[in-house]
Length: 383
Image 1 (cartoon, rainbow, N blue to C red):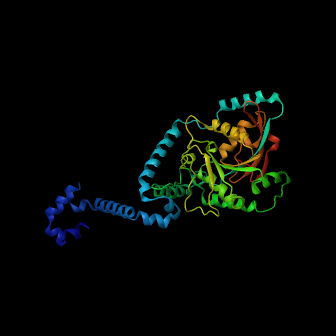
Image 2: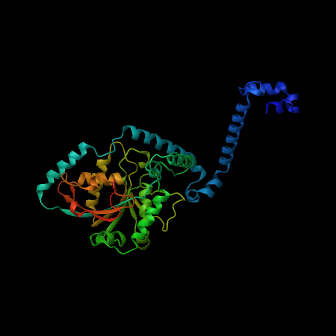
Image 3: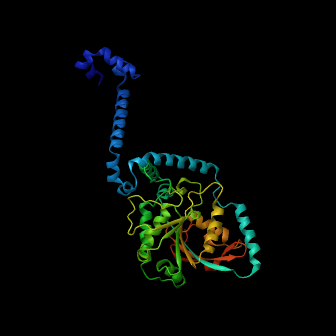
C-alpha cells in the first residue's frame, strides 16, 4: 500500500498535505509504518458509516425484521426505551448484588412454626385445588443451562448479538427472557397432549380443569415466557372461552438473575416478539400486575401473598403458569416440615403440569396436602 501511494499522482503532488493529515490523525508520517493502523481506521470509518446508514433506515429495518414490534413501537419511542432499559439494567445490577430473593432457612423456620401453630386446630377452613404449569425453556435457559461445552460460546455470542440488536425496542433476550425455539416446541407438545383423552384416572380431574375450564381460573406470572406458555399451551381452551389470563406479579420467579426481571410495567400486559406465532389474540387481566419485584418484597413474601390471594378467590381451582424455583419454593414452604417429597427437591420439568390441594387454616396459615399431589404431564426432573 505504501509503495503504491508513494508512486501515485496524489502522493507525489501533495506530500506535505498527506503528512499534515496523518499528523492530525495522530499517525506516523511514514506510510510504511501505518499500513495496519490505516486498515483499522478504514474499518472503523466503515463501521460508523454502516451504523449511520442503519440509523437512517431504522424504520424500514424494523418493519422488515420485527413487524410485530414495529406495530407497537415508533422511532419516537426509542429514546425513552433506551432510558428505560438503562434503568432496568441498573436496577438489575443492584438487585443482583443486594437482593436476597430466595427462601432462606429463617423463612422455612417461620413456615414450620406456622404449620405447628395451625396443626391442632382441626380441619382446614377451605381447600383450593392449585395446578402448577411450568413455562417452556427460555432463551436464558438455552444459553446457560445446556452445559458449557464449546457450543456454549456460540450460543452466548449469537444471543448477545441479538440482545444488542434489540436494545432500542421493548424486547430482550436476557431481560425477561422469552421462550426459546425448544420452549415453543415444548408448549406445542403440551397443547397436543391436552387434545388427547386423559389416560391416568388420578389426573382426570386436573386434566378436565385445565382443558374444559369449569370452575377454574387461569393465572400467570407477568414474565413473558410464562404468559406465552399459557397462550400457546392452552390455546384451544382460550379460543373457546375467550377468558382472560390473570397476571399476578407475586408469581414472578424467585432469583436474582436478570432473566427474572420484567419488561412489563405495572398494570400492563407483556408484549411478544415476532418469533412467537400465536393462534389467538392475547387477553390478559393485569389488575394484579404490580410491576417488578422489589428488594423489600422477597420470594417468601410473594409466596404468602399469592397463597392468601388464592384463598380469597371464589374459584375452587386455580391454574398457574409460572417458574421452577417459585414452584419448588412453594412446596418447601407449605408442605409439612416432616414431609420428604420430591417436590421440595426437584424442579418441575419444562411445561410439566402438577396439581395439589392447598389447605387454608386459621390466622392465614396454609398447608399442601402431600397425598393430593398429582402429576398430569411431565412431572419432576430426575436431577
